[in-house]
Length: 494
Image (cartoon, rainbow, N blue to C red; front, side):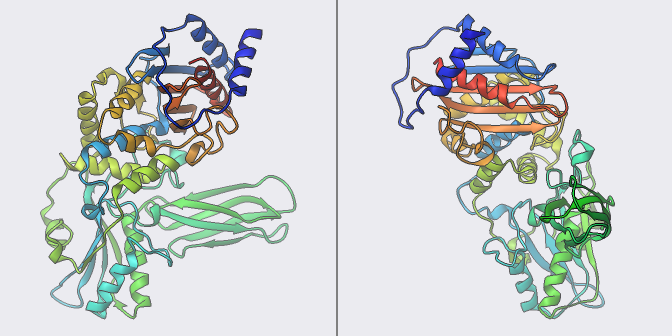
């Protein structure tokens, strides 16, 4: 025990390594004592936690391996695979993302004013914010207002992808939150609605400020003191819900609720914008999705063609031009944005299929075969990591990360990862330690799961590739402290 504590003290006291490249250290053989010490560190985690760890040098020589071929729930480490696939397979990721830009057109009817058709093409970034500058729904509203002063229905068309708004294996308690909002080819404002709950007086309901898109019943109560215990219930496939529980006197509580019909929300928001521009809307907002497994729906196609079926851009009144996809890759990895990762996975699946989750699974399997990652090391049910059906081995993750180092986009992937003690989801981890600024890695947190995979620089200046997974973490506990201590020890000893 004294030896272990001394080694950990050495790791914490070691000066933070400079960012400049240091000469590569001579290859070392696996140290049985280091493996034993790492096991002792991980034994400090909550009882019952199951770990997998693999650390290699860039040439593939192993530094430490603990159950590297066992399969684990990777949580948001899944995004490493999704973003790597995007960089490897999507064209021109550093150019404006024209392929995904939302379009709008008018569909003539036999009688009455034309319908507006708002066509989603997989963009995750369209915004209705008043200060929006790029990829703004207001641009499309302006185009319609310049063309006509009367319209019928506002159709939100999300038929580019099959209607798989939630991935298999997602926990029910995440649906309706900003972590588990619905996935749709037509998305707006991250498919989230902000809500602010402000305490009033003890015994009285708090004030609720939320979008009029939702009708919320206020069953909450303000209390003088105590714990904040607020709950939200939203009607599935509806726009009603309720807030209940208690909020103590003091600061307001802010939350973001997930939307279960993103195409309808986008159409409804466009309706509000058109009304503000003096356009009379005689119809209502409508959403359209494609049933999974059905590729050709003649009735649907004839009702919105050619606009909604991806015809030439001349069929649109206007088409938005999102920022380069590379920016979204960085956002996904830095802050672990689930919706954006899911849409990226479906776009990858669309390259060789229908944009379904099954197509995504085939696409990532093909990529990992190219990277010589063992097929037994992975299975994916989604692109974000919210599914508890996903499985990954440490060897599969390290294999992907090592392969990426030799690809033209490898440095781009590494630069997109959070920096220990610096930014993203690692901004508060490794602060004040030798790994501050010397570790770039993707985090992962889910029910009973902690994960971390990426690159770190050691005391001698070597770069190591690693993946560490903790599964079966008891409820109310975390394995992060043990995981971080193990990585600090590895960095100090190499």
